Length: 132
Ligand SMILES: Nc1nc2c([nH]c(=O)n2[C@H]2C[C@H](O)[C@@H](COP(=O)(O)OP(=O)(O)OP(=O)(O)O)O2)c(=O)[nH]1
Image (cartoon, rainbow, N blue to C red; front, side, top):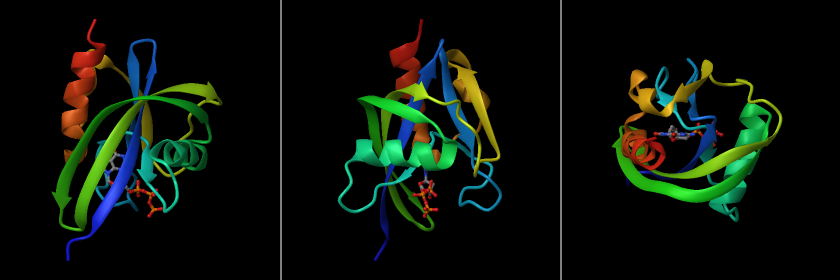
């Protein structure tokens, strides 16, 4: 059976830019850009998972807002269902502990990096939602 993987991603917005994270060499989908986040663990709400993942991976605290998009994408390792949420920074400056790079990208330039395939619909939606 194909593995089903529930993943949440934070669309952190600051001054007209969105935080994108490039997956590191040891990670699946290495080199692709994503919304920071990760797998939802059992008994956890998507919002709780996002807060936990950002603390673990980016060493910052966030407030989670509205849902942006939910999409599924089939990779060779399983089907990822990615749900993205708007988020704002509450404390700390995001630091890459596992990612190759973090970049605040102006909304209009979001196509300048190669997103993980599951993220493309969310990127389109964000560009519509946050366009000036
Ligand atoms: N975090 C995140 N993962 C994404 C996105 N788009 C996308 O296809 N993925 C995929 C990559 C991974 O296969 C999976 C999430 O795994 P992960 O490695 O980030 O999650 P995790 O920290 O909980 O993983 P683990 O190493 O603890 O097992 O979803 C995205 O925007 N954000």
